[in-house]
Image (tube, one colour):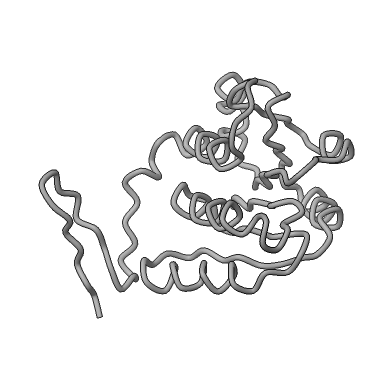
Length: 175
């Protein structure tokens, strides 16, 4: 199981980026996103609508405080992975992480990540040591962790499916 924890969501300011964290997590193979910070029912509803329309088994839930989420997952044996530009390079350590068969909690930062998050993590990973988007970091990390298999995922239970086509849009409606 791969769960993504989005730290300190802020209403209004972070809505678009947090929505993209959820979409990216789902598209790249995560099972769940937990939002911390300010409650935003619209993001949760939006994610539910995506699953309803496009299929899969993905959920988004809200828990105000992130520290209990990290503690609970650590107690359950999850490997805690924090995405940061200050960490070890993802390509150097992901084979070790991917192959150990432990459930994962991937932490995606908010405005400023407190020191205790770095300390709680089993791995502080970077996709680059340059400033970048947390959405890009999540996509690259999940891509490495899934070994590329997520790129061809098809959900049979969705109302819609895209048929890859080089010439035009092609969508199958399964209603």
